Amino acid sequence: MRVALIGASGNAGSRILSELVIRGHSVAAIVRNPDAVPKLANVKAKKGDVYDQAGLAELLQGHDAVISSVHFTASDPAKLIAAVRESGVKRYLVVGGAGSLEVAPGLKLIDAPDFPEAYRSEATAGAAFLDRLRQDQDLDWTFLSPSAMFVPGERTGVFRLGLDQLIANEAGSSISFEDFAIALVDELEKPTHIRRRFTVGY
Image (tube, rainbow, N blue to C red; front, side, top):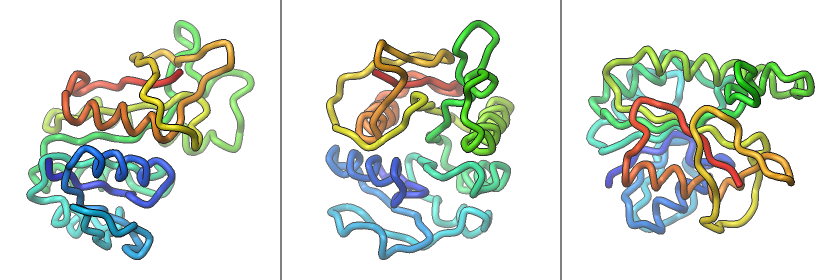
């Protein structure tokens, strides 16, 4: 596929870029600094600004899918979603957050007593982004939430999928950037969560 990846040089974005390349997809890596994108086959680094709605829409045109891997507090959800819509691309996958996942019936992770204050702003913005997507009738969107701990690790291909409940085991709740990328590109290639959120964890 021809995929536009916004935020291709970040922690999650760089792993998603690698996963797309491994599977033979053609990628437009949209970043603030094109020099930060490694020289890879079928990858074109393009300078883009997530706050420039018209410019971003132009960069996204002609692709089969858009993947957004940017911090929610460092972007404007309304402009991002509008840019995708204006580009004419229907398939939109979003690297989500864990804060809006349920840890008990009716209790979201962000509302749990021990939720770290340092992550509250980003988690709140991520939940708002998901709410905005749920109101959209034009895009075939998917929002993939990681586990509570979203960290560098190994590409194992061994993980579990869920929907709106946080995935955890005896060691806690975690997923590597590398395995998250596998789950996201799996969804790109074989869509099973159109217009909904799902999650991945060990």
